[in-house]
Amino acid sequence: MSLLVTGSIGIDTVETPFGRKENVIGGSAVYFAYAASFFTPVRLVGVVGEDCPPNFLDVLEGRDVDTGGLEVRKGSKTFRWHGSYVKDMNEAVTVEVDLNVLAERAPKIPEAYRDSRHVFLANTHPVLQQQMVDSLTGPKLVVADTMNLWIQTERPEVLKLLKRIDGLVLNDGEARLLTDKKNLIAAARDVLSMGPKFVVIKKGEHGSLLCTPRDTFVLPAFPAEKVVDPTGAGDSFAGGMMGYLATQGNVSPATVKRALAFGTVVASFTIADFSLAGLRATTREQIDERWHEFKQAMSF
Amino acid sequence: MSLLVTGSIGIDTVETPFGRKENVIGGSAVYFAYAASFFTPVRLVGVVGEDCPPNFLDVLEGRDVDTGGLEVRKGSKTFRWHGSYVKDMNEAVTVEVDLNVLAERAPKIPEAYRDSRHVFLANTHPVLQQQMVDSLTGPKLVVADTMNLWIQTERPEVLKLLKRIDGLVLNDGEARLLTDKKNLIAAARDVLSMGPKFVVIKKGEHGSLLCTPRDTFVLPAFPAEKVVDPTGAGDSFAGGMMGYLATQGNVSPATVKRALAFGTVVASFTIADFSLAGLRATTREQIDERWHEFKQAMSF
Image (cartoon, rainbow over the protein chains, first blue to last red):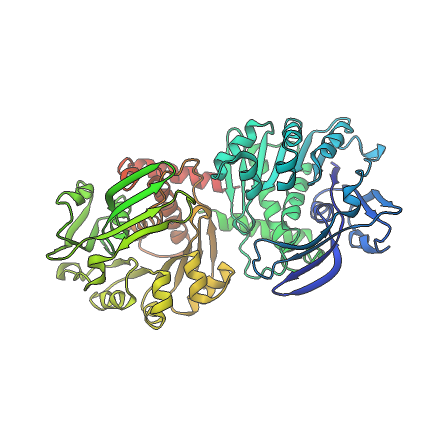
């Protein structure tokens, strides 16, 4: 079943202990779409400016990603992010960020995409995320990401959004900020009381945590000895998870656990190289193989 | 099979967001011995001063812990530690520490204990740890803990120790300090090249990591919504792990994985209350039950 993603498309400059890459493709929607396309067709909604290099999205060529929802906006500039992991591979320091087109009106969800059954709303203004939910005609599973900026400045809108989605994906710091709970399980339980049926807390190198009203599931990250560039790990995780879920007919605890493990594995390929290079060097067969290896490693 | 532990016995004062306890029993050997005694008989070697309340070690009454190796040293004072977790439940701030008797000569391993097959050398000066290895007549499995102080000030002796033990247990910060590697898997591999056959890195709320020359195994902590006092979690983890290993005839990867899971589960009972109260309220049946629950939760 088709999976819709809306999120950012960015021109990134990234520094890590392994080097520096300038003006490479990034953005939540791009990582998500590539990761999810290992599992299911993806519909991408996003906006770039007219400064975007014409072949920039060629990275998605040959993938089952429909870019009909991509808007190239005249007179606008593409979102740019410059981050550094030189001091700490677990947390990017933003050297410079230019929201550019992301600070303008949201891209429109094309008419043909409104029937999407599985939807991922990557991090953006919670009012825009609600507008996107409004424009869907019969979604089965809507999952959103958010960030500290909106939790701090648009809390009432974040809370309204939470009542309209099935799942929330956010990182540990954001979960603590949203709930004012230090303990992550307590924080996740609090988020559940705000509306969603499940919450996934991403803990970076420490893996992820899933909470539903009945279950708590903790999964470590796939053990990686060499991390080259962590950019996009969280979006790839969400892409792998949602991509797998879109192929299943249910969100039973067992299915969501398997989905989390697929997300974990896909993210482990992302961080092995800069930008999209890690994912581009990966096949579905490698993902399945590593998934089985991970499953085996986690059983005792 | 009998398990020998040498380590500290302390009078603790602990503050956490859940309250303050003064002059309660603590120390690595006490937590370890109690935790391991769920699985196997334990021989405890440690030293206190004459200020130690006469019934202080009654906490071990009824447990299968032989305290024949406990020395009450005349003219000396017991080790005291005052720590606070009020700001961060994941890292104790030491408010005050008085090494007292721990800064003097080590307690002697009784003649009757020298044949111990399984040995855990809790954190102390690495020269003393080596002397203890010297005094054993035929150990099968020797595992040690260490700390940042010795890594920084007695590095050559820590390195000598590493060549004489089967396993090393240490926390993430210590592993990074010892190896100068930020990535924990790379750090664990480095530790292996220094001598031990396996290394376990404790990551607090993020669980633990086991590395052998062939395998890497990552295990999250048992999901706990309420942590009252994290003191002794690492020693209880080691006690549960070594206690289980002492009952097994091998240290195969599968056995060590199960042992790690037992350590994880035992530690989850420790942190549910202050001092030894969490462990004292626990039965072997509850440990087995939670272990199976954990095993089930970790499979996908």
